[in-house]
Length: 205
Image 1 (cartoon, rainbow, N blue to C red):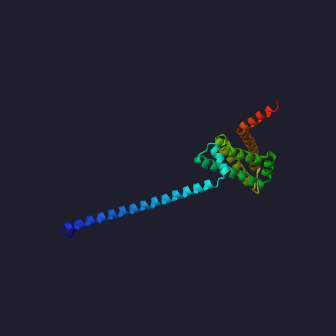
Image 2: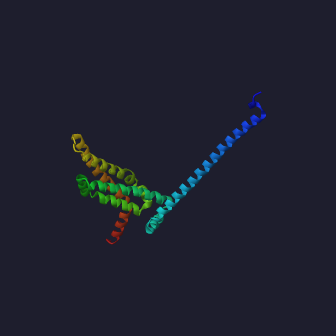
Image 3: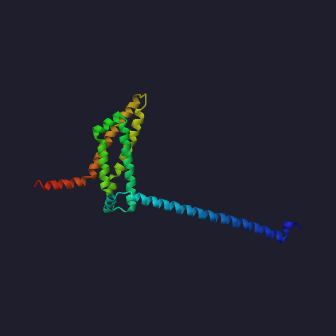
């Protein structure tokens, strides 16, 4: 009879297996505790960061947000969208300042003034951000891309006929974008314009 077949040997074998299982269980438990601790610290850090972001808001601006009916989640979303929009407007200004053609177009159309005006109007009416969705999510991003690509292609040392054609089409696209954004802007401020018009009419009677 082999030693492995004795009851004592079998008992030792099972004890060994049980020991391995307990070891694996302990490792899993420790890993779970570490992960939960990391998750808690990470979540706490994000919450603290979010609170700090809130502290950076001007009290007057924050009061206006609440007056317009925005909750904390709405405010975070609104600020994120407007930060992106401002970044794109700044990109357009930066690119045009280094390109004579784009700078000339901006000056002729007064484009930068329009972009900043629309931006300011949205900030004043944060609860109407949906009414400016075409500007924020379609027209402004597309315009930024056109400026970026135009500047890149215009910097080529050699430009053939097809390249010049694309550049000319881009200039036409910028002008069309201007008219579209201008139209959207006037729609956005139409209520204010009507209020002012009615108030002015009262003094004409």
